[in-house]
Amino acid sequence: MRLPGVISFVIASLCLAGCSSTSGMDALDMQKPSNETTSSVVRPSAPIASVPVARANAPRKRIEVASEDDTARPFGLAEEETVAFPAPELPDSVEPPIEEAALVSPPKLLSRAAPPMLAGPVTRYGFRDAKPINFGRSSPRHLAVHGVDVSRWQGDVNWEKLRAQGANFAYIKATDGGDHLDPMFTRNWRGAGAAGLKRGAYHFFYWCRTAGEQADWFIRNVPKVEGALPPVIDVEWNGDSSCQRRPSREKVLEKMQVFMDKLERHYGQRPIIYTAPDFYRDNLQGAFPDYPFWLRAVARHPSKVYPDRKWLFWQYSGSGLSHGVTGRIDLNVFHGDERQWRAWAGGGGRQMMADSD
Image (tube, one colour):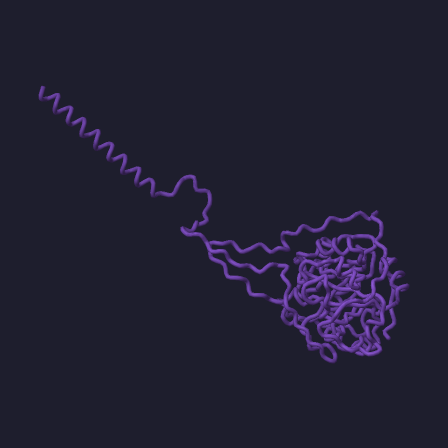
């Protein structure tokens, strides 16, 4: 009787030791990484505070200084595209936000068979100006057909109100460089067309990219639509750009020609050249006599700022006010009367050159 009792005691002790040992191993295993883990991202132990990120389409305060020859103004048509804004600081465990422009698919090519959008009835000037200039007898108000240019910085545009207040046409920021698409381009393009404005797209030229790839980028993103206004190349110096390069006059003209030739072959329209006084003096005097020009002159008439240059559009204010936008908007005027506007716009903007005076 005693031996079986001892054996029973030994067996019971071994069982208890085995249970205790297994429980200890399980406890150790619980501290190892799970074999189910499929991501190497370190997950924080506490919630991450939300990081405020500025909306891409939030209106930006614009600086406008009108000098005698308009050289004091640091930027031109596309001033917003090259200003370096500091990026918000993000925690190490948070991926940086994706650029909104990268999420916008290029607009699909619209049918060439679509009916052309003819110029509608001309709406008379009804804008206000935060910094009005007295141009005297050369006032742009004496001209019949006014319009605007817009980009992401005008935010959500009420195109119906803009049209009612005097915008008969709109040039819309599409691209700059070889990889940036204005995130509001598609919405603005459709909105302007639906409101009955003649519309066109412009490209801000970047001197650190080849002309060919910039032309390809514009063509990829701007639909070929019958009745649209000719495309615009915006050329200017911008000291706040990430690209500080200032090519020689010869190189500037060569790059512009490559870009414009490629657009003309694709759209069947000769591009319009937009520029500002300082860039014009450095590069464009006497150049491109067979191309239409869109000139910025917010303090004096273009004939005073760009002597002997024929022009088609005049950007006469960067401080326009309208019920259709929050903040300020660029104001422009067509160099001709209503009949000439209909003839030019109805013909797809082909080959009209206005006198310089």
